[in-house]
Image (cartoon, rainbow, N blue to C red; front, side, top):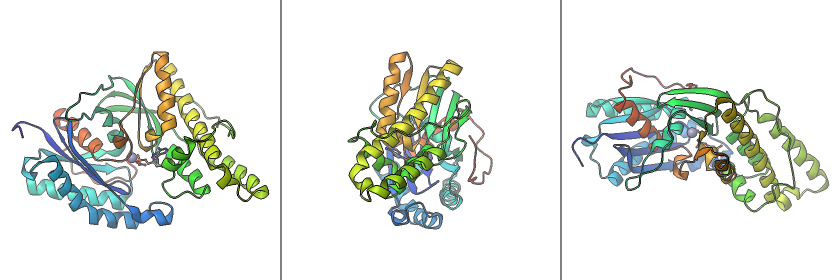
Length: 341
Ligand code: KG4
Ligand code: ZN
């Protein structure tokens, strides 16, 4: 390892994934995630169980990450950790671990906002390939299980939310509809899987009327519930027989709502570079719809799958830019479950 490399250990534990990553001079050397299977049977994340699983996983995950990266702990420059938003008990595990290790190694601990991490995931570089990165300013549609926002990104640390959901997040809508379809948690990826083989135009659902570039998904959820209840009355096997077309219709509606507002934001700001981030940016329908916007002289940035859903490489890259841009990271931060961007 080159002496002057800046090596950041990233730690992410905001929800139900325990993750660690090593980024050296902006390039990923290792990125490991331990998923928590324990929540599947409850149909959603159980906070107490998540904290406990983080405690079990964090040491082995960090250990494996250092080994895979070929980095000795004494060579780490700083530790970046997720400080919020997220589940408080989960955040406490990662932040306490990161701070304690940083004291032991006598290096800085850098508190990172998870949502900023999702956006800065666009700046992660692989070891042997130079990837095109967005130029400032750009717009980022951040869509996850807890957030749906359009963010104007003027610089690494100058971001402004210009629109957001007034109720449910897009990922939440995917997961709640999946639950109605009796699919296991988290249902988003399964809806995506079935949608690929279905007809998106057989069942259509109404779009909400929301001001500006804000979103709403709770009405959609209710209209799908009523639709299913009505169909199940005449055919108890309706879901089984039509799962692919239902998923395709639901996915098309959610994607259309997202794209409609994104295009509106482009027109209002005249910023023609757009990026997507967060778990729902793994959705194939959303990725395809965005690609097709490229034709209208818009530049589109879509992260690799592994950097869409929660991961620690995005926390490490945010820590890296904090470090090299001399941001103030010295304060003794306390995890904040409702941290804003
Ligand atoms: O960013 P993320 O991993 O965690 C949060 O910070 O919330 O996002 C998780 C969300 C879940 O709601 C999950 O169902 C959704 O992202 N998701 C998807 C897909 N992959 C993950 N939704 C639709 N299609 C997908 N392929
Ligand atoms: Zn996330």
